[in-house]
Image 1 (cartoon, one colour):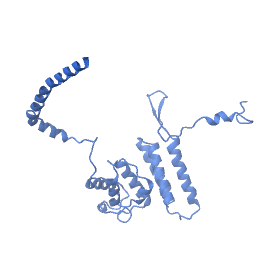
Image 2 (cartoon, helix red, strand yellow):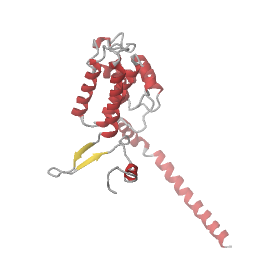
Image 3 (cartoon, chains in turn blue, brown):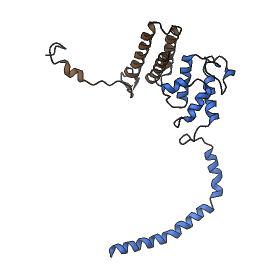
Image 4 (tube, helix red, strand yellow):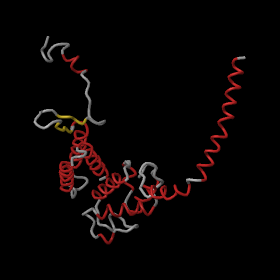
Length: 137
Length: 110
């Protein structure tokens, strides 16, 4: 008895609430959208770091290239290209290569296990490896 | 050679852990590591000093990683430091102290 009364009053309250909520929703949808739009766009111009999408190839390559440009052991900055090989094109020896790979780790905040790190010998390899890492950013 | 490279990498990693956020010291450590490896870079891989040098490098890496902590003065003029104990820092237990007194000899406290 008591329960059915509670249920009845609850459903009555819900029915009474619903039109009001619906009306509010349509009003919100119709009116302020036009005025909100420019605000949202300007907000998105701020770069968000929290939930970035996947890295794209150009960006990864660009960051690795600029990292190499700051590395004083590279023989000639003009040689730093997407396909450049660390030893053959950039004149880096194996110790330098280790350092480059570690700098790449730091740049993308990941840790590359030794066996993978040993296999990275060119900018192309590095880009490929970074793109495969879900944690890289 | 692969051994030397992996020692080099682990040493560089250790330095980065030990001297994190301390630019000048980290740079100095890296220069030192680099120089030591460069000095021996032309050694023949079959040279008998190579394994010892690599072992030395690995031990240095271990000490840097586990037994070096950074301290930062909490307040100027006071001799109190805040230590940055990190996940790799070696934390010994005192088990050996309990057993040291038993039996003959040892610390002589019995």
